[in-house]
Image (tube, rainbow, N blue to C red):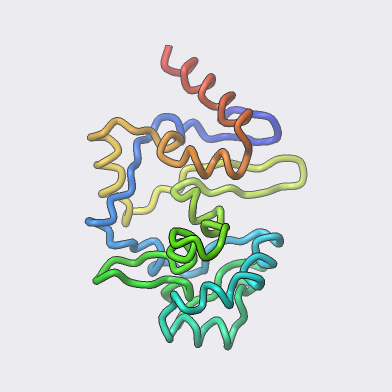
Length: 188
């Protein structure tokens, strides 16, 4: 672990390799697990605002879940998160064949909205936990992502490079530039 500004960062994000392999995992991170995607308070407001524009992209089960639970929920641990369909799929998930995709991201890709998706989804496999004085930035190792780890190793892409756009979105260009300096120092 090392400190970077007001973050404590796991060296795993520099040392482990990762490139999503949707053809192998089929987007399992959007349908497996026991909680929705973590959200910030600001993101809950964004979801409320964009829902009418995202709704046409969603499955009827997702729409039903959102209309019953709201555009966001409070999880069993008290954290803000996306609602789930029958405690499984994220309510915003859609399918292209057997592959899970994000309905929010599809609306973004088509220029309907200007918000890509929750930053926690964009950052995955990195998870950020906010504390009073700092944020912990960790690599979340999940067996459903083994194909992504293998592909990352094959392509020699460390986690932090794979999620560069999301890290910049979360922490800014300067933070990411400092992270790259640390990564270079660790290689020596």
